Image: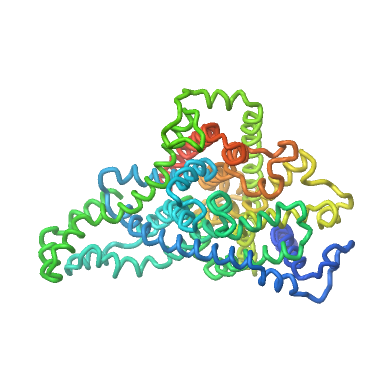
Length: 280
Length: 317
């Protein structure tokens, strides 16, 4: 009897859990699937009430968006700016994180916490002086200016994640390398870096997200020729005449698909990175 | 830990090492690099940060005490003391934006934490396929905020949006001041509650299982276990999530900009939107710089709290 009731209780518990999980999907993924659906409907189907639930998908909006010069140009700008800033910030930031993890020198603690503070700065509060300086230096409206801005914003992120990661690595290997007469640089490049690969993957996704998803810097520091995808998307979304839902949703999907695929591929590292520095 | 690092550095017989490297590579350059390794590797990060963060921050601090416009030379402004700050606090638009931002931050962060905690507890259950649900939950926060806001703008459309279709009446989600505030906040909570959930889930997974098992053996109910064992153990993680989300909600801009542009009738004009419009639409650079610095000072207070909280957690664990 008591076995039966406890089994029934457990069954109810499990069903409730699944009910909750499915509600989660409905709330957090449902809206996205609906938008994905909109992008696969014809213009007439999009505006029908009640909404069409079963239809033969059409790719006409994707075909149109992918032949738009505006979209292709912005896509290439986003790709250039993102890859350049991720590469640059890794090259600059990873060695520094290693030093922050392994060496103590005058001011190293202060420097580390200052970098953390920089990560917290609201972009809008530093945008104006950066705009003024970049305009004077001729860096406004260029991809280079944007790359510099994103690289700088990525550095605190990298140091934050990679310092923790390096601290977690055992240093016996490094010591052995020293004793064998390897220089610090050789030890770092040949021994430490290969071990740090998972951490580097984590750091680079977060930097990639930062650069690919940023709107506010790109909105101010680019013009029509150098604007990135979020800026282009904002003009689509902001236009009062924005009734071309097909193009809007299709281009939105094209903007986020690369990032989502990449994020899911390296999911484990991503979760580690999202909680790094705040949860150990 | 400082101990470990310093002893490690000292343990290496510096002179012998240098001799052996120079023998091996036959170059003084590599031994010079070796001796200055720490400085050389930190230098690029330091330089870039000072040039692209430090210099602009100093510039905007100077500008905020000046009457300056974009036609003048960089340091050609006239010193006006606190006039810009006084102007800001006597501008009802600014004070309204300040209070709105505070209310907005408090409400969205509270909701994110409440929902995030609930979701984390749900995802912590060991049922089949729960990993797939964890994976799915990552998706909303990966989405470009501008694109997410655009999607919600379509979903909330009064004529063809699916939300109003379900409700059955054409609500002007973005046209009514109160509804617009709710909509804008909702999009933020929708995108970031999963992030809080993942932080807290990581926290839950790292909790020791003994106290929970002990409480269960002692006959505590599930709610009692949560209230008196799990929650107190999780508190450090909740504090960190709270401060992180406060700092990031405080800067909210993208979704407001795309969905309402600060309207209707300034109902969603947060501090970030005010600063942005003052700087780049009204082109009042000095006033914009002063508003920027007020934002910076508020965030700075929370950063100090954050560092203190994460250090205390590190020590506690």
